[in-house]
Image (cartoon, rainbow, N blue to C red; front, side):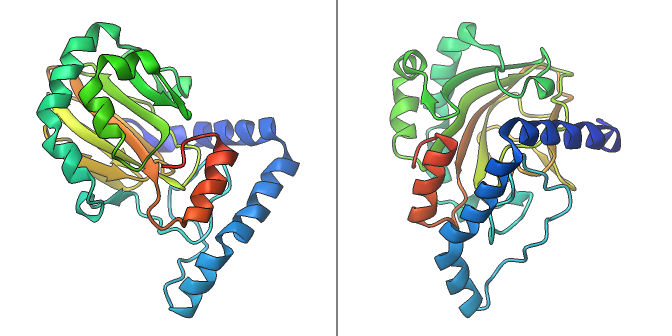
Length: 253
């Protein structure tokens, strides 16, 4: 198991480097605008007594300033997102298409510090950009994705070798949640998110907030395969999603 405490300074330094690369003015502007754009939702939540606390949750360290007023939970219930049932029901078709394209898997191209050689992916969308060739190669999966509220940040098949793991890391923002559909050989694979640990299961969907420190370990004897889908936090309004689509250069969903 990964030594989380040893990784925390590295994660903090990596996030600080990211923010320096953007610059303090843009980071400050993003924080200011977040309260302006989220203002109507925050006002309604305050009036109804449902306003979320502004303090950060333990181990929630997104690269960007936290978007205000969003429930901060490391792990979410898949049944709270009705569309995950469609993903689950299509599991056999998705698995068949994944088997047909496995030769096209490549080392994950995002956040390279967290992506050892044990992790390989086949992207359909990456940072808002569709991978047309891959979508065409998996038409049933592509058709399903067209019906889902994904935001295009990350949508891919993911494979982790037996004995492999991802280093602890965080995602860029708390406005996006992540769903993993277990496709094959999930026994022995675990997802660690904040202070929570969840077992992968073939045919089941896990939903989590990747703005929390998280990582995956595969202690099984075979390659673990999943479909990963990022989607907007359900509390965001249409106005917020539209703004964030432009600011983050991803899909409106």
